[in-house]
Image (cartoon, rainbow, N blue to C red):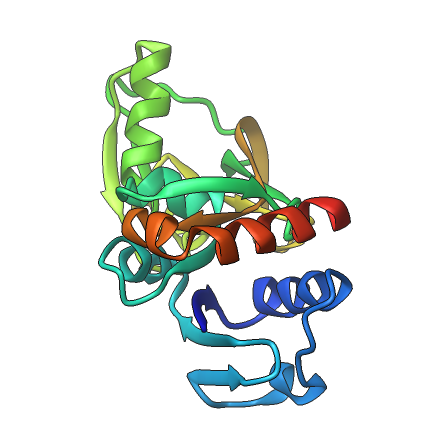
Length: 204
């Protein structure tokens, strides 16, 4: 039995479709379940449904053999895991956004984000000095209430930015969901994990 950590919602639903297409017999009711642990004896898979930022932690510590997480989470969390496959699902991108027409006329702009490590690295690579403000949600509020000059956040359709009067200024990174593996599991359950990787590769 392989244990897989992944976030509930869009990534979970798209990953289930991929796994079914790769020949894993998973019940259709999985996507509607409110349980946090789901097991398919037939597929020999157990799913642990976690907060997106926690998935790499579960995999790093070995409570899960495999995880599926967005590249944004992997860049931010920087956990000691193997990234083995780009599943090319839940595509979006990280971007710098702010109020339309607002220029940066301060020496040290304030950047609000739930990705402080990613944002800091981005501006460091550009040689720009900024102040990073860590937020956990509703990042779009920050420029509107004067907390920050810019935000760094996930953009999918751009609708949320538009509805809040914000525009995208710069693209930071393209994001898709990746399959990650615990280092010990990779050796102890190598053949089973490699079989899953190869079957998913064909579908991807």
